[in-house]
Image 1 (cartoon, rainbow, N blue to C red):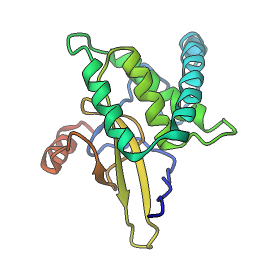
Image 2: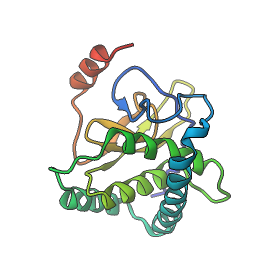
Image 3: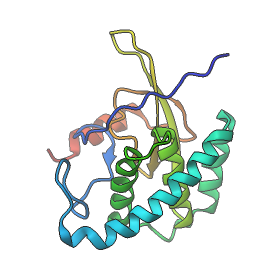
Image 4: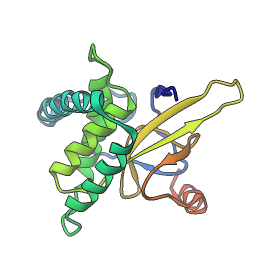
Length: 185
């Protein structure tokens, strides 16, 4: 069976469905970082570079069954009493895709999800890599991977158009719709 390449598109913040890890702790969508952001941005960029490089090496040998194994290991090592802060989660979600766009090697959605999972795992936070597919009307088939932490999309952007294929925890579509209706515009 031929492998289907993951076709990742630039992510956009959306107001429907799952919450994205976007907050006031990072520059707004489309805005440049402020001078006051320089300290955390450098620190997170260095860590993000290392995690993306590590994830790239993992990706080379990754088999589909390994994703479920990684998800179970991330849940098993998570400390539920120790929550990762909104600020830290938003900054991880901010840095990883921006660094990935600037690397000469492949750092698309699955590599970003692995990097984010490694980073969160080091903080004893739970996470899950999920994979979905889309089949738009123009006939272009695409697969996409994203990383979830609780009910937040950490990497992967807008996932509404994808049908979930691979995940340990499946989000009820009705719950997703209710979350979208209750989220402030």
